[in-house]
Length: 461
Image (cartoon, rainbow, N blue to C red; front, side, top):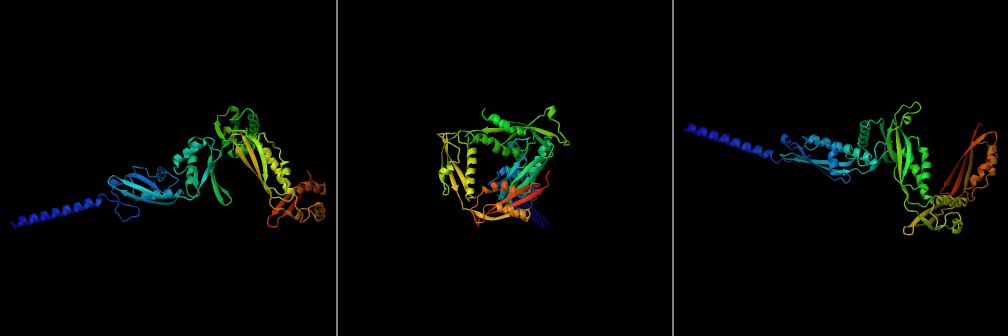
């Protein structure tokens, strides 16, 4: 009887202990939360390591899905804290973020990850030169698909510029395009202004340049100007000044003051048999392109009036006499620019060497006219400072100095140097071929002009 009672209590005690520890194990594993800032918590059970969600807060530049894609963790993957640390490092190394922190929580279903970020302070534009095989928008899209944090701009530090370069190189390889991707950080003064990508090791030549949107009157002029590009090596950098200094002036001369030209659109063309060869020893493959320039001429404006302000030294009637434009005619801003240079030369001849004229256009869209308000800033009068001659002996210098008519302290005439140099050449030995370089320096504090003439003697050909 006592043995049976003893066995009963032993079985009861063992059952109670098993129940107690079983309950403890269940309560320890269910509903547990873990964060990156709590290293003392227990590791996530294998059944709950599947990544369910990535949330991103704090960025004003990037969408949540772009940051999530850039961190390198795909949803559904089996992950742990080391993976989260690696993802945070990857975001940091891109250079796109100034601060990065993460937290995570898990349940029986899986893990939810949250990044808190702040964007880098400065981004600069990325420029793509001579990627003629892709349109601009197409290229941006293709790079963005593989580098989610690239949206046309890049941070000035970090690996993101290298990642873009790698994608561009991959695009060349995939499309069987010979060439190598180069990039450089373009600086202005001490500041980085842009990151410029280009393709080296491939020759791109222009076959034709065509214009869309041009009227019959302007089209022959534009085509004649574009002929110089046929057969030349393609460069967007060369086409940009061509647009500004050859295309748009055709319209501004005729009163189309708001004419615009879109960026050049190159299109790769299949060369004819006669075009496929490359002259000389350059064995690189040649890519031929046709260039399209889309012109929007806009409305034509006629001149209504011109008025002067700020001029005290020279009367408005005198200044107006230097202008060729007449009211009622198409507003020709090319001629106006030329005339205003003549006005500056007149001021310079009277010692106002820093005088400027600003032309402010006031448009009347209903009437189709434009008025120009010409604002003069005369500045101070400058006087003659030091005159120096270099590269000649003392005797010759004495002759040239005696021929110079503006003495120290006289009002400086900016036109005088053009008159003086031909006269001075007559005093130089005729047996020697002379070159002269001029250096005119305005000293703002003293309001004087120093003139330095450097002579170089060359043996006659």
